[in-house]
Image 1 (cartoon, rainbow, N blue to C red):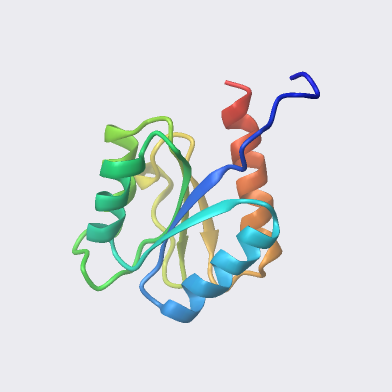
Image 2 (cartoon, rainbow, N blue to C red; image 1 turned 30 degrees about the vertical axis):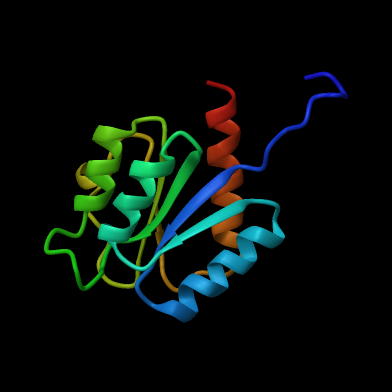
Amino acid sequence: MTPTEIKEPPVVLIVEDEPLVRMTAADELEEAGFHVLEAANARVALAVLEARSDEVQVLFTDVDMPDSTDRMALAEQVHQRWPHIRLLISSGYAPPHPDEIPDDGHFMPKPYRGATPVRHIHEMTGRFRNR
């Protein structure tokens, strides 16, 4: 990259049904230099991705949301439809079985400190840019 090239900040779509958790995570990621999109549930997340999937590099999603009967349905659908999007999956309940997490997906238990998702997403977007 030459000094005149401008590198866009990585775009992260946060999917979290708890507004305070979503807002806190969004603030932490924005302070770390990411561009953040937000969705309160899987339906909204899929609508965002339909419109902006070429921009999104990471889906940071809770797996325990009221509108989902299958905990991993959103992550699996995103993995199948948009394989370039990296997955950071989080839950305050039982973690998914490792076989349930799509390739290149990462699991992060709740509660987490603000720096933890930032570190994971920095690592994930670094790998994404080097592919």
